[in-house]
Image (cartoon, rainbow, N blue to C red):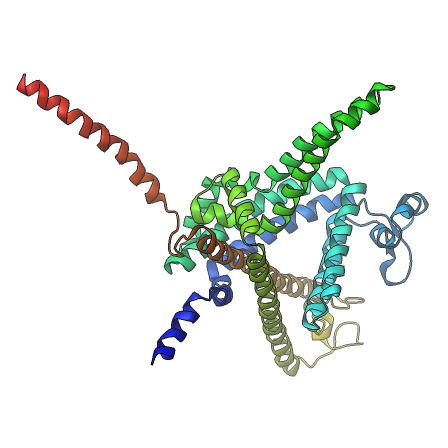
Length: 437
């Protein structure tokens, strides 16, 4: 009997199974709507900015060779590639180039994860960040503008998703769309500045080391000053390392800290750093569980989308038997290419198609992009939902805070009468003494 009573207690103490609630929370329709709108705004901004077409492409089979492909093999050869093929091939936009590259690396990381090839996962992630380095190095202005737009959109959408997840996980409540967006817009400054503050810290600390380096240019005395103040420079380097590690490991907790506790940006950074450095192994374990579980959920959702498209097209194919205008393929094949699990929105071969088939192909492609957009919105929703749960679990272990404890606007309302009540209590004795006198 004693063992039977102890086993549920032991299971209750295991917090990591609660991460599995992230899937159900991430498919909440309001979360998917917010994620879809965020993806649509970012893609629209990237599409508009891609009218500049600054990525040089060398003509060749398979669409040619982009400067990003050159950079991945030899970063020093990009300048010569740009000089040799500028205006020769069909140039592309930075956003579309990065999008296709990131999608390839994402699926490569998933395949490596399912094959338990952790080095393969690390390689795909490292190549993605290397591609981001290419964009920052050779298209700096473009990247800064796009980064500000993405951060603003993610601050609103991510804050809303974290707020929805926090209320669902803590209290079982499902806030409305406007309620979640109202919270994120109210806390927009905290969401927007939380990822930027660590960068500012690194730059501020590094500025002192930079000034010491400038002093080192003074003849004879410079090197002596550098040697004397080297301990301070090393201390600054240690602080930079602490901030960088804390930011890399605790970045996922910053938005949930604002959504769960109503924190400002510095409190969110402090909490994320504290949880990471207090229990790093637990944080790593929770993150690994969320990654594996998220990969499984993504494959399931992608299979669902593929089955949806394949079954729809198959039954349409049974009904559409006439040939297209170019007499080479069926009419359906001319407006909708057969989808695959890897490529859900393959473009149809519209060569020789008439105007009605072109319009139909455009509409079909538009609806396929909506399906893909919903798939990406699920990834966004799952990411913020899972990290919100992880934040709550880490807060429970480090600060011993109950999982049900979540910030509400009533907390601010309750805090205001407290001051007024204390003042009235203080004024009562004074009024009584005046009456006695």
